[in-house]
Length: 67
Length: 67
DNA sequence: TTGTCATGTAAAGCGTCCTTCACAAACTGA
DNA sequence: TCAGTTTGTGAAGGACGCTTTACATGACAA
Image 1 (tube, rainbow over the protein chains, first blue to last red):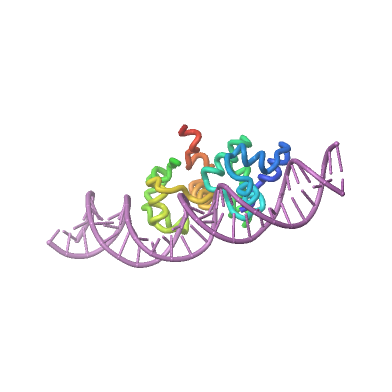
Image 2: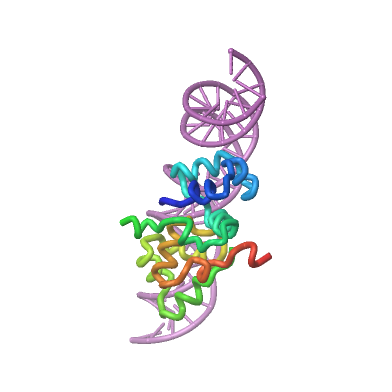
């Protein structure tokens, strides 16, 4: 499942560690989500979307949208 | 994390098995999500929201909204 | 009463999510 | 060059997501 995390983070000039701190997860979790190694849990997806003030659908790309 | 799955399902007159079939998951998974035993994965949350033609935020209630 | 459907739950198993610790490579700045 | 930052990745461990199989309950119809 694709996402726009790296771009959203870059727009703000944050390192993966900066973002991890704001989300209260490890840097490796942020990296794993950005590099597509796994998807976040639903609660973490909510925290991410809220941090960027976006609906979840504008941060994460639905698998069905990808086809 | 709370959700409106039971109500949305009831509005349509679907059993848990009916919903499970449409989502391509087990009946037990639907039951576990409805009874709050665990949250769905993010991809499954997308499928659920799309099935009901709602944004994810209108199916699942953000933990931060609950307080 | 008997059968069927809907729901709730338990156990075991597998893969995923997230952690900490650790190491390596690329880049930046002095 | 040298130190510090950033990113990518691996291994091991704990908790969660989802499965199949199975059993128990309550509602409803025959």
